[in-house]
Image (cartoon, rainbow, N blue to C red; front, side, top):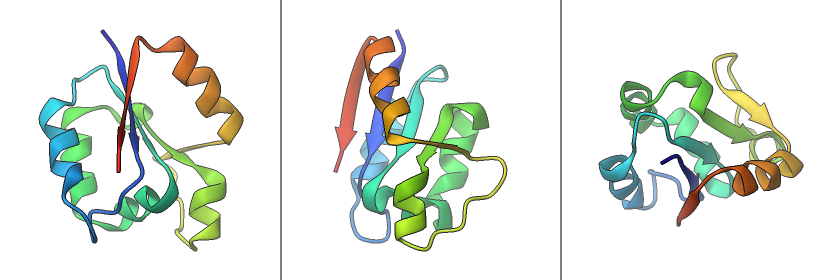
Length: 97
């Protein structure tokens, strides 16, 4: 069963990211939003990439731009409208904040 993980917290400020990693399945999707986009600049990103393919790690583009976080090519930037679509297509979602 595919789970959509919404990561709203930066690993620089909170430890919930480790809880997310502990339950992350290889077919799950992770979306970085709000302050979660700062995880693109944190070593925790490498742990995500060991568990899930790069295509399953998405970033809300508007949130990264608002925080001055540079998006690199391997991270798929999506719009907020795509988040709604994905949440309807997955079996369940978990918000990490």
